[in-house]
Length: 114
Length: 109
Image 1: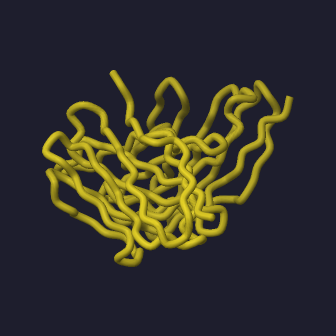
Image 2 (image 1 turned 30 degrees about the horizontal axis):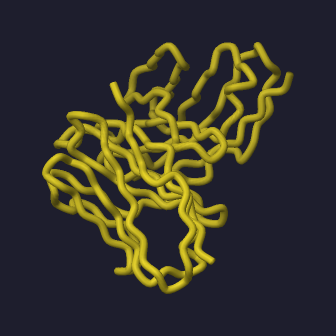
């Protein structure tokens, strides 16, 4: 079956702009989570969506937002980009629900802010 | 999630078993131990998980101590393609992982 698909793979934006990243989960997966990975901070949890509702949120400023559509596809948006937002943004999907399910990650979107 | 502690780096000879330790001394009874690995700039890849029993799959074995305070991931015959950063995670949510800094495993020819 198809894996988690993230688009675009690479993106270059200018400070102050906004950006939208897209994630298509594995078919049947209802939970989508987003992570930011930087060399200094490692992998950090941004937020998780389940059935179109944000269920968990990490410690990131309000410039980082997301949403999930009825087909479980998710987008994350970063407004007023800063140089420090340059990172690999990873999306992961799981079955969700009340059990403990492992993630399947996408290959990520590499965002460079100049 | 319980805090996990892993050595920052390890080397392993190709063809030998790689044993990657993880300490999770504050793990609670309903927290699972997950292992993921990340090959340079790719998304993390699921390896294995367990609660209290030892587990084995086609990729690796997971040995969890009886008191559940530590675990070991075993790659039975390491290859160069196993060079990666390995993350041990203890969680009861399954949807908000704390990855930590992981162990950078280098498989040496």
